[in-house]
Image 1 (cartoon, each protein chain N blue to C red):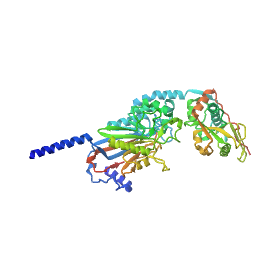
Image 2: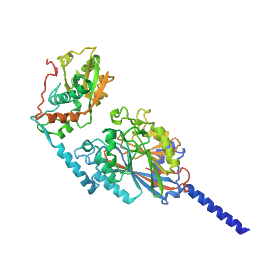
Image 3: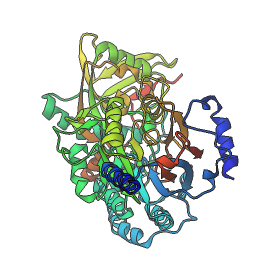
Image 4: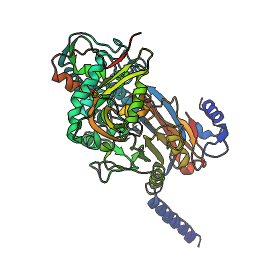
Length: 307
Length: 257
């Protein structure tokens, strides 16, 4: 079963074979023996205040989504694997009257109840101004991560972190955030003195810190840059993945892209990065399972992508 | 002799192990990654704790949404006129009336006219009670009022755009087309547009940014955002009046053949 899927994957990525990262390993018994560690990542993006399921008369997404159902799925996954991280890639706010009436209070409280571990900041999370975002921070028991927004001259100063390291079953998982350029997208009166820094530069620095200083085994990027753009000069998840190294998974948002399965991108060091995005409105949850072994037990750059 | 060697080996192992364990614990790397897309649909039950947590918020929103602000004596749809409609006139007039004082306070003088877009009228104004929900239905988007300063030339480009005949809501200006669809007369505050004048037009941020191909808004002389959502303009307008009974009029017409 695994082998069939694996071969399928190999064929799809045929142009990349031989460059490292994905090795054949057809005869490898290591596929059959259980992995030492198992980490599950659950993720959402662009939920846009869709606290309740889409109404039954919605032309496209009738009866889909809803926080109460999402909670059940999350609980079931956690029962199956307690070593689960729950992450969101931004644009938590804006889209239903729940935001207009309560300014994001309910969204943050529900995410805290669901046990979200971390989220990054989307452009719409500034829709009530940077003060409106800061005002909701007491309702968030999860981390708000951003490596490339400099909030030091704003009310958000000290309320976010560039990254956070989670330790699950002895595995060190580094999660960091990157956000989209705000000028042209968000009114300056909303983001005030927030400074946007180059996502590639900050990603390189942050991944270096996570891999070397923090000794992380898995590195995950929460991105609100958008999946890809026709204008290749505009930084997207696909270009970020290709121009950096050391990231295992980019969980994206902003473009509301419905991916059936993660896109496999080759990074600067010819290793594979997964880029995923699951639409918007809480319609889907993405699930990525990492099976890990001790590095000295693994053949160098051996990785099976069963996606 | 033999024994000493063995001890040396053992002790060096101990030292080596200590050094290594100080340096780090075990390192892990992924050997397999698997993915799954989980759709949140009605095959999944609802978590009771979340449902009961949402309930008070939901009920309060419903009560607020259903609170009656005014009454409409008839139903008005955006299909009830060719060049101007009662509901469109109401929206443009509401922007004119509710936001001009805000602009005047900041700028020191009033703006001249309002231009919205026909596509931005998202529902009918139905006969009966007008509620907050009505404002959300008419304007579900978050667009805000911006006042754009245009040159006389840009104003003429605007009228060229409008002569295509879509009933984009306007207020404070008039357009009269001849029976062959050419511009016969255009007035802003009752006066013809002068090339060397500038004009202040209230619109929304979507149109200012080129929405609906309103390219005449590109490169304006100046822009002043009012931080006032169109939806809130409507809510405030509905609160101000007991009865909302807009009419179709002569602000945008075409001569009959």
